[in-house]
Amino acid sequence: MAAGLKTVILLSFVLAVGFLLIILSCALWANWLPLLVALIFVLAPLPNALFAHCGADDFSAHESAPSAVDLGRFMTATVVVTGFALPIVLTHSEVIKPAACVMSIIGGGLVYGTILAYAAAFRQDYSEFD
Image (cartoon, rainbow, N blue to C red; front, top):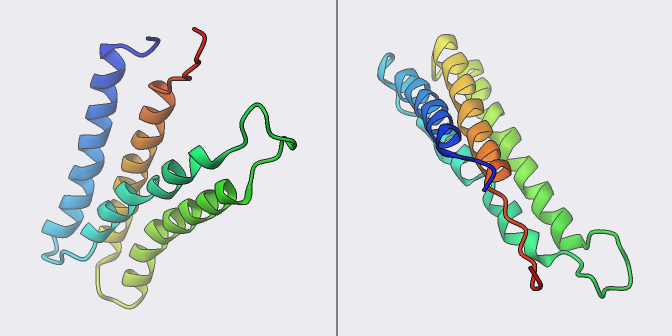
């Protein structure tokens, strides 16, 4: 196992800071709509994780990724862009304050980055013969 206890502690600290920024962007201005950003970024890797197992195996005729994997990547990208765009749209329509928008975007980026870093650090390649 390449990732150790220090990695887990660092990732949990960054995740806590991200959620803190999102919650503060809601609580300081008494408007809880930026909390949707946390939900969006937590659910963002879900399509990619669901469709990742639809890839080609060792015995398939072609080496390119099938359309199901591409669909999962497209859906994940759409959700991530929505997570960054939602606070901007709410600020433009004057539903939330610009400072809440900035805090929400930074916090959401930290949350999603932590999820990606955790998946990369603890990725295990299963082999039948190892």
